[in-house]
Image 1: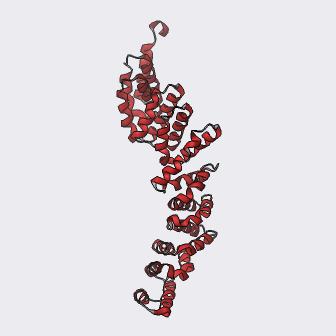
Image 2: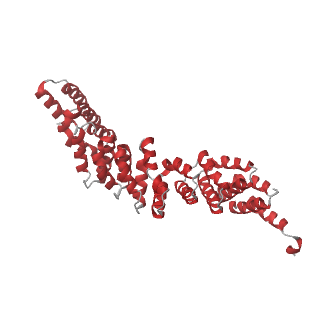
Image 3: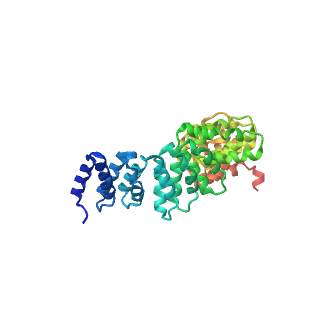
Length: 365
């Protein structure tokens, strides 16, 4: 007959106080048995006590790993914590268990491996394999754990960013987000030489990988927007567009290219800024403030960006209508085009009215 909850708690308190070799063995056996108790709180206490015993409780490893299958979250989290305190032997046990057919179990193992942090370097290959698992939970937890392992994971993750499988690339990029900022920046900057190198294929591949790295690559890409090589500037813009992150630094960095010597770079800058601001309208006020500029090229780039936001740029319509009275014809024409792209009734009516008034009388007959 199973122990009652109260008696089980008393037992767990008593067994830890036992002395002598035999006493320690008895306490360990009792705690292992308690991992199967009907009351989940007792199972949690047992796992916590085993974790407190650390390496001396390695005999409990199989039972603790099995407890990762427990249906109660508090139990499997306590078991995972306990396992993470038991060194290389525990790592070996978890790595072997990653071959289990139970996907939910593998997901929890992948998560538990991350608790070891940098000490789990030997688990990197199995976690990299898990990034390709058909189960989304396993993919996610494997990525998180690779990130927590840190430095040892960087090389394999950078290689994974070359994959033609978007799931693997996404998982690798996500893993990098869990690393320290120092490791992240080293990982990003490791791609810069290829990105700025002479080999066109290597450049393109590095640009793709930087884009897949997400937000952590943004500071380096903003630096590259200032590069004297026009191809680097263009590819940096493209990568920022893939990432889609926008803040004041991104807006300022991209907006600076509205005055680039190359027209195709200016056009790309307005397209990228319009796209990413359209996805995050909290950035719109910052973009609207650019409309106060007296610099014609800067103003034109901003107008194009607002137009490329489509309907999300509706807040800019009153300013764009005012610009229809601007002295420079090129600026007025850009404003008309932007109003048409935004496409609200007010915007279209204003653009059409300007167009009618601009057509000479003889052409309207």
